[in-house]
Length: 288
Image (tube, rainbow, N blue to C red; front, side, top):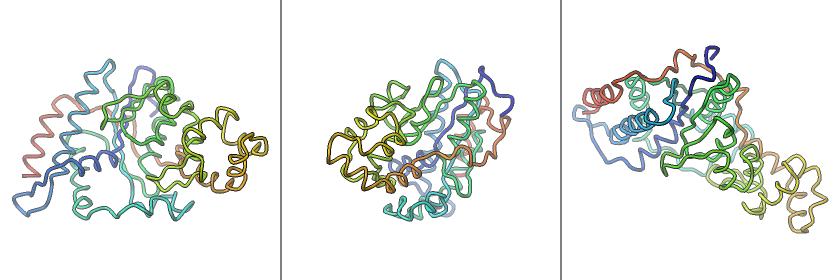
């Protein structure tokens, strides 16, 4: 992204997050030719158009847009850290899995850059491109409801939860978690994240995690100075679960350095005018 600068605005979209929303909300719709279920794909395409229209109507229209999808769950590098990572989740419904290639095709029909990595999740690739853009002074909008990504929020980086239509800046993240955005990873390592199978410290909830981090500053200082924790129950939990907390911190870390960057700045140029019409025509040609 060598040409990106402070005049640019990168919009990075968590495609896996969006496809699950489309699956949960979409109405059954069978394709006429072969009976393939395409209801989630139909809604996914409409959601993309709605999002792009909203972003274009904002104060700074995106100059670059990219959408990222997860690899199969078992292929994530986080499974090497913990076999229980997301292991409690049901396997993806085959009907949804069969639609993912169509969802990728929908993105391409609109004119949107798409990428998936073999071992890195969408979060990691979003982090990689966000860090690259920030280093060049660009503005970044992250589209996802994923809590992990709130670690990336800072000046000129905001996150939108499209499901609740809520934007998070630094103040919004701190209000949500009780700690600054740069400490969200530490917070999740302590409080855990049941949705991802991140254990955290048993018995340390969100309020306790925030209180400990505000007192010690960060997770490293907390683990290194656990003997100084005043409350006996917290002191025992932290000292007895140091390794589990460290493992949890690895699971919620975003691997911006290690994630591949298959998309160039040119690849990610925002879709040109007429994207809504292209999406409509694609749905008529491919999904009916």
